[in-house]
Structure formats: structure tokens, C-alpha cells
Image 1 (tube, rainbow, N blue to C red):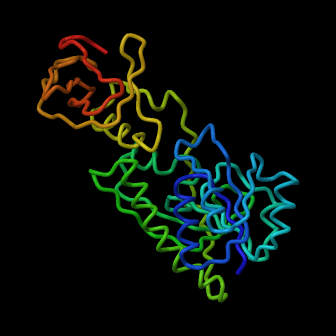
Image 2 (image 1 turned 90 degrees about the vertical axis):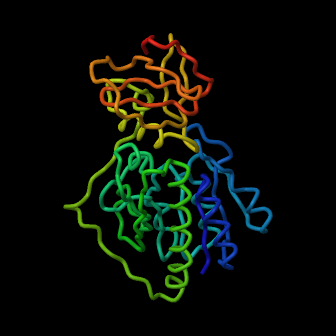
Length: 293
């Protein structure tokens, strides 16, 4: 089964590496040399070259050049794992078996942007790893494989990304032979259960001390590495917050944003409900006790 692989993020690299280790017939790889919007961007050309696989840099996956390049590779199927632009019909119809996409959420729920970040920011206890047949609707095609991903209180963006990757690689190992032998199943998405997450913006990453400590903690764990990090403003200077800890049993008659004290050299700040300790910031954050943010 001839496969063209499209991807440009850390998960794409892991998936491609796993497919190669499985002996999959990867006949071409489309990737990005650089990305302005994926903080987990990875250029797949090096791993392709090491394994003798032709690769193509493309800033426009739907261009004539890209279409002709993929068509020349005569793929039976296309895998698109980690690509932020929608594929148009001219690409979706190139391979007889179609295009398999990936979305780390429990489709048909939670289609759209930033699924791992939103799952953590919203404090969900569970999400999913979903492979599906792509069509002209974003994340709307028939489901090929879906597995739950449990989210613990200790998880952050990095650990959840790793969980997602390991579960997804197991799914790939299971469904690739089924597709090759035409023994796979397709499950229609129930449109009545569909929902979508919107694209996040800079304001979504700014800490508002009127939020509860739990909400701020979830924001930080959702945006920590490999993503861009949550931010606070200190006299107009942006400070990145990478790790926090909840603090309870604090007085309720104190305004949000007040620096309560330092504990083991880390500032504790009153929130709309409870307080939060800033464990890791960039640059190092040393506000004055009693001051306000």
C-alpha cells in the first residue's frame, strides 16, 4: 500500500518514524521548512532523506505543484497528521483510498483548533485520539479509529502530548494492516453531537487574577511547553508562566492580584478564588510582597 505522508509537527515526526519502523511503503512526504504558527513544528525532510523517501516543501498544500507531485507518487492512500490548513477536494481525491486525518479529541465533539490546549484549560478529565477519513468539512469525516485519553490532575501540555502520541501510535499499528487488507470499518459522525472549539488568540493566554486559582492553573498547564506559555504583565513587561501550584486556605477578604508572600522563593498571588504559587517563570519573577498585579 503506497502512502504519501503530510505533516509538520512533533507528532507528525513520531507517526512517520513509527510507520517506517513498521515497514510501511512511504513513497513521499510533504512538509514545511518553517512555521509561524506551530510551536511544535518539525521539518520532516531529514528523517525522509535518512530513509530514502522523497520529500517536498510546500507552503500551499493545495497548489498545482503539490497536487502534481503527490499524483506522480501514485499513492493508494494519504496520511495527513499534523497540518494546519484544510485540504481541498483536488488533494482529497488523489488517492483511491482517500486521506486519513488525525484529531486529538472525541469527534464528533470538540472539532476545530487547539484540542489539547482546550481540554486542559477547560479542566476536562478525558479526551480522545481520533483518526478519520478527511472530507471538505474540518474534522467531519467518517471515523476510522478512536481511543480515549484520560487526563490526570498532574498532566500538562507536555505529558498529555506524550500520552496522545503513544496511544495514537498504537492505533496506527492496528489500522494500517486493516486498511491494506480491506478489513477496516468506517463510522459516520453523528452531526447532532458535533461541537467545535475556536482558534485561540493572544488575549486567551493572559492571566486575569479575577479568575479562580484553578482556572489559572489549568490555563498554565494547557499552554506550557511545547506551546507558547501563559503570560502575566508586570509593569508592562510580559512574564511567561510555565508551572504553577494551587494554594488553599487563604483569606477571602483580599483582592485578586495581591502578592501575599513568598514560599521557598516562589511568589503566592491571590486569585478570584484561592491563590496560586508561580513555580516556574521566564524571566524570574520577584515582585514585592503586598504589591498588586
